[in-house]
Structure formats: structure tokens, C-alpha cells
Length: 72
Image 1: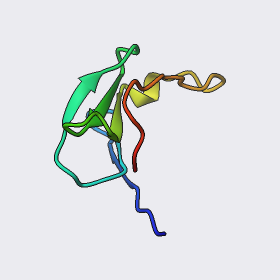
Image 2 (image 1 turned 90 degrees about the vertical axis):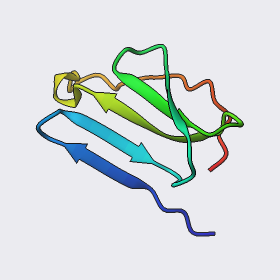
Image 3 (image 1 turned 120 degrees about the horizontal axis):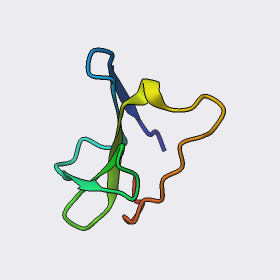
């Protein structure tokens, strides 16, 4: 099985997006204000985005719990 992940970074807006699928979906909030999850109609995780990437602490990982079904 081959999986493709698309990663986009916009330096000007300091925005990172990671997509596991090109399926239609919508963005939904997470418990972290900087992170949104992209899900389909069934709640399957399609990807996520991070705002303010350059403001993340270098010594600490960004930890987010996605509430979606993970079906890539």
C-alpha cells in the first residue's frame, strides 16, 4: 500500500498544512488554538493545519489530541 502525504508551508502567513487525503472535507477546531483538523463527513481525519509555526517552542513538541476517526 502506498500513502501520499502533502505538506504545505506558507512562510508569509506562517501557516503549515499537512494533508493525508484529497477527499472533500472541512476544518474543525482542536483543543489547541493554533491547530485545526481537516475531517470528512464521517469524521475521518484528512489532515491538519498549524498557525504561527515559527512561534512554537523549539525544545517542546506540539501535542494535540485529534478527536476524529483516523482512517487514512
